[in-house]
Every structure is written in C-alpha cells, then in structure tokens.
Picture 1 (cartoon, chains in turn orange, cyan):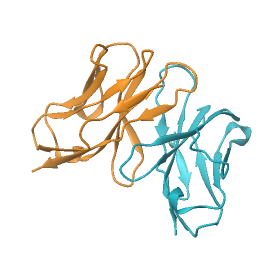
Picture 2 (cartoon, one colour):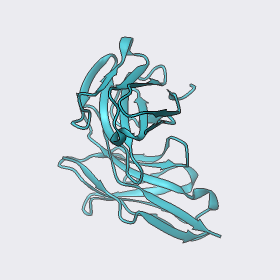
Picture 3 (spheres, one colour):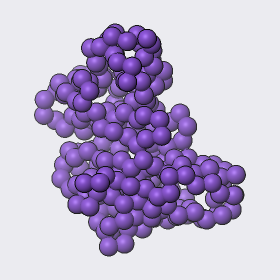
Picture 4 (cartoon, one colour):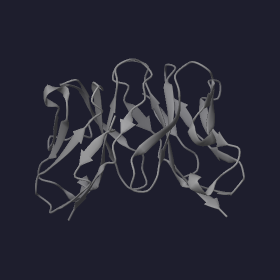
Length: 114
Length: 114
C-alpha cells in the first residue's frame, strides 16, 4: 500500500527566506508524486508533479521539488518566500497504473512572516 | 476550459436527511474522482469513475453513500441518512486518460450536519 508522510503540520518562515516542506512516501513500486496548494475556501491547485522523467521538477510560482528514490523523499522548496505563499500544501502519491487515485499527506500549513 | 465545478458550495442539513452533490468535470476528461477532506487532514479517496463506470470504491464509502456518473459526464454523490460524522468538504476531481496526468480539482462542497 502507498502512504505519504508530511513532517511538520505548521511551518513558519520569514518573507524572503527559504521554504522547505518535507514529504516522504512509501510505495512498493515507483510512484507518481504531486504537490498541491490550497488557499482558504478554494480547491487544490497543482504546483508540480514527478512522473519518472527528470528528478528535479520545477513548478509554478518558483517552487521546485527533487525526487530522491534512496531517501523516498519529494521535498518542496522555494528559494525566497513571498507573503502570497501562505497556504496549505499537500503532497500526494499515486500509482503508475490502474485508477491513479491519490493518497495525500496530512498537509503543511505555511505561514510567511513579514 | 471552465474547470471543474461543484454544486452546491455549501450545504447545511439536519441529521437523518439525505443530501446530493453534483460535480461537472472538465468536458474532455474521462476520469472522475471524489474525495473527502476533514479539518486538519488531507483529502481521502472515496470513489473513481472511468467514463460512466464506477471502478473503485473506498471502504470509507459506507452503504449510505452512492455515486453515479450517467453518460460519463457529470457525477452525483448522494449521502442518505446523514450523520454528524459526515460533516466534511467533498472534493471532485477529473483528469484526462493516459499515464501521469494530474487531477484537476473543483472548489468542493462543504457539508455541515447538525
């Protein structure tokens, strides 16, 4: 069975500082991995995805993530936080065949301090 | 492309009543998913349709829950005899066929059972 662990339910960073949101997965086969962002009262928006091509994936709004098979990790980073990055972030894993349903982590709420 | 839409956005009901939610996916997407998200948690998979066929249901989907996707277009999720534990955000997502395609999420229907 697949699972996702997001370490840190709340992360605070200063504006302009590095953002690092952690995601570790468990899967018996190489998975697809996704990061989504959720703003209050809005649906989930895709930031980036890993689908077995390049291990360093660049997404929208300056975010990127690196797939590390040896560490079973897919951490999300952004070099310089902006106030508008304050939101909840979800990491998700899916199989590479079948239904492609997502298994989500519990989310990390990012707070950006002025 | 108008995105995934869901109706209603909010529903307040009394325990024991039946409720029905609607999801309109992106028109060319043949895959449709329902998820449930409770406060402080990531979305949890409920059920999956490929065109009009319901191919997978989570054990979370008790016999009080039923979903349909007639003609492979919009989908409905009905909850009979609602319980307070059904209070949650119900999210619909769609994706095109093929491997590695991300899911596009609607804004969700927030259900409150009194």
